[in-house]
Image (cartoon, rainbow, N blue to C red):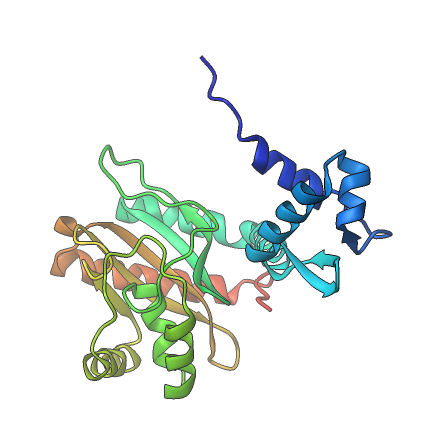
Length: 253
């Protein structure tokens, strides 16, 4: 028996489909007329979409597409553009390390996966493009935190949306010490920090000015990330990051 679809979600997307290059704003009246809803239902849908960031209020009763749609559109565009550069590299790295590999970019809410090569191991850790990671407890997030000023770091940590993390916010002094090590070493580790049985090692992919624009990481079961593997992974990750950065098609914005 097929799983029934969620009609409310479908209706929400139908409302978003009312937007077009010639229809950049809609109102409750637009939804009532085009969707056959009553005023109360149309208003409730629009309020829900606004809460989710899918639409934003422009003036009383009128809405335009919101920041979440822009962010998702950017992720889709960037993922497609980067795929030709990134995917062959991370596929090869995943086979070499026999673990999953991903590339993340820093978005407004935290590190977001833009490309992934999932391991073919029978027992492995897999992730999907678009997954949002915490800043404070992941190897990917620690790389970006290490480059931020204290003020920016505090603002980011206060505003982040933690999804799927079992880790509490670390002591400020302990975090500063760890981030200083990340800056000195040029890589970051997550040895069960975010989830008890999952580990990761991550290195930056920098632009010509030396700023981190992407992170490259491998991740898997903590029991497999011993000292020998971490050394090998770090070496392979850094070599792959250098190759990606040197490709003519690599042009992160």
